[in-house]
Image (cartoon, rainbow, N blue to C red; front, side):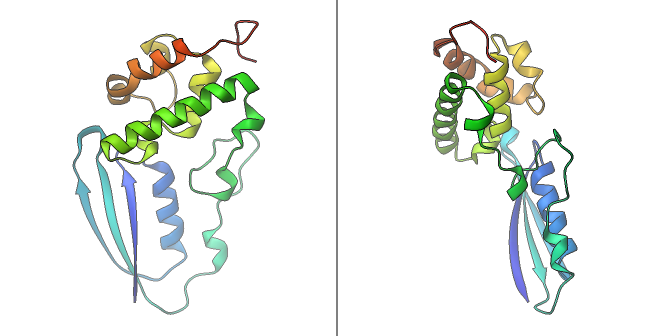
Length: 171
């Protein structure tokens, strides 16, 4: 028997939950132990999945489901990887890259994964929309009251300090 460990954030659990479900569907699960790590808005589940060493289900079960064009990407899958250099304009990508550096520093300081601060998709959307107030930031999928309170003002300050595109709007 082998053990595999997973963490599932309490906020935005879907990507990790999908990965866990694909894993469990492709293996013979013997036992699952779970423990909640209570850390306020950064709470998460830790799961220890014990699987039998024998053959599992067909390997196709591990593959991410096919997505329709324009569908939201699932984090943690090869299909989910988006090259934001291709998606964002050059000035927007510079702002996006700056936000990623800021996010990494915040995550390290708080001892949380970077996606607990903001996901790459959320950062890209923040840059695309050039949000200028908390209410607009809260309209982005997955950014709720806890993230607004904890990181909202800091991300808005970084956006205000960032150079704006020459035409004043993002393409």
